[in-house]
Image (cartoon, rainbow, N blue to C red; front, side, top):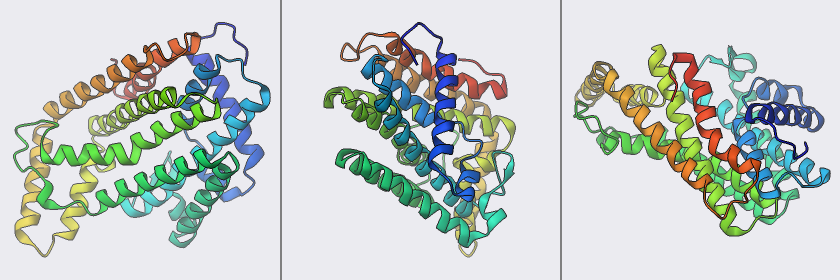
Length: 324
């Protein structure tokens, strides 16, 4: 890809093609390829912007191919987490198809997920100690978020949902799960890309923060789409409550509180949707502000960094006829 002026959409299209080509080149296991099939590649796409803004698009072909290898590692880790999440949540569909554990069984799904993580870590190791440590640290955060979700405690819920606020105990816990499970991988993808581009530590940290803000906005938008479509069971919030309800069947008081909270959530959906949009816009603005910092090299990719958050979120919100 040269440094001639292009649009953000064209850049993402071309980069997606490059990532798909690299996946086919590197991954031969048909079961793993079936898991990777149909992914949006958002994390490596955002990482590609971080990489390109650091190099100005003047990197060598070998360096770009090395970056693409790292992108495959990002996709392996992300999709492995989805395979395991589907088992935990009991989801039957993923990207319009039966989930992997439905097709292949739980045993195969657990082991294929582990295999994907192992391949990803091997890739990270081949790219040096910094990348390998980042990979391990990020996966630890993801697991911490998953554990927090699985072990979510009814005592953490603020039962007064009428007072909708991200400062409530429930939404604070919800936000922490998003930060650990989703935003951390976006953040690390951008930081890893900066490492691949030999960027300074300061620049790498700014791009890491940028990725975290975009990742946070993305997960909120994803959940908002689920809420708007009435597919509340697919959002982060309702599985937490459903899991709690299953755990609390023998505890009448706790189970009743959870059912009451569900009713309040449904009753307050208009306010919840406004809250989601407000939070999404806040994280997008933070990402945009970071993209304008002087430490970021002034090239066409810097402009793309500023445009990408709204572009990515609007593409998702288009499903429910909302534009920011």
